Amino acid sequence: MSAPATSPSAPTRPLLAIETSCDDTACAILAYDGTILAEGVLSQTDHAILGGVVPEIAARAHLDALPTLVAEVLKKASLTLADIDTFAGTTGPGLIGGLIVGSSYAKGLAMALHRPFVAVNHIEAHILTPRLPSLGADLHFPYLTMLVSGGHCQCVSVEETGRYVRLGGTIDDAAGEAFDKVAKMLGLGWPGGPALEKLATEGRDDAYPLPRPLKGREGCDFSFSGLKTAVSRLIDTQDPTGSRDALPRQFAADVAASFQRAVADVMADRAEHALALSPTATALVVAGGVAANKTLRHALEQVAANHGIPFFAPPLRLCTDNAVMVAWAALERLHAGETPNEIDTAARPRWPLSERTPAHA
Image 1: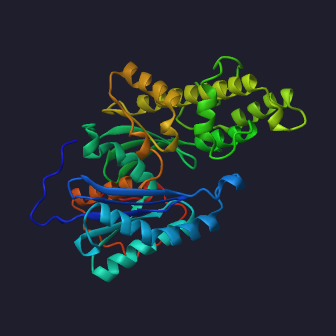
Image 2 (image 1 turned 180 degrees about the vertical axis):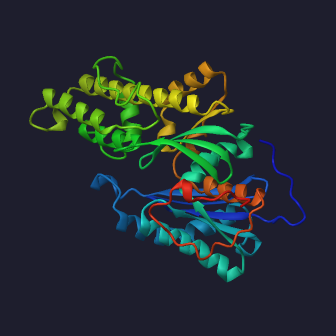
Image 3 (image 1 turned 90 degrees about the vertical axis):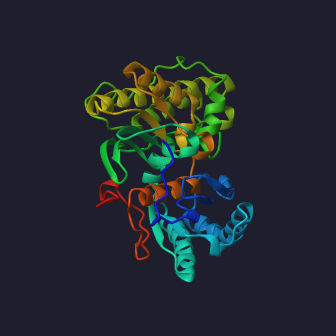
């Protein structure tokens, strides 16, 4: 998309955003036209030995990291807090402790400097990321987004900023959650998605005929619980004692590749169904942390090609949680004419897109 023109009434100074919905502490500063002036992400490592994110530990880590991170990002941009025109923060959905810490920090800065605050929906931020001008996607409404992450798996028709039609979602485990759990079964530790993808390069994706839950059925819902159970039973045939260190590497690689292919096949099938329900979609987009998976990207890219529409995916660093996407989501609303006045918006662990009103409403 082309960068929006700055109107006389529009804010001309930068926007600073904070993202703390899970275990990554992130801050970014964007100019009004979407130019990234500076960004930073601090990934927490304490959770790895615990096998997953511990909400209380994550919240405390955000609280410790934010002052230094914000100062560093301001320094990168050669700005001070007084130069910031608008503040934004992820306000939901996510882990409530982290959301309270990050959004409260951003609100505090906004109140101290008498600046407006924009409450950003984490899911909305993911699905609007490909429209960031610096990515050069030239992405126009309406388009179809496959949101695939550790906590979310949805098909969303993006009609305009603030108007989203949810065509389907997971009825049990999200895809990213399934990746992490299968990786743990294979003894790969946490976070499991990248490790499983790396191991899968050594295996055959047709080695084991794993199920494709809901493939071919009407609608756009997902289910990965049964696939995860099938993998568990398959591993038990080789490792009845449950000692994952005893798994032969080639067996583990074949399981990883077969599982990854099954997920990609399901996602491609669901995308086909979603496009049938969205005949005016101008493009197919994949977003969220699992969008970094190359096998999944290739499968969805092929679906888009079959329908004669372009396929877009953010660069890998913008697939996982980051503050650039939060800042851009806030700017999208400003570009659409919304006047931010959301200092009283409370952090919430669940925030359906259906409750996000159109920006011009």
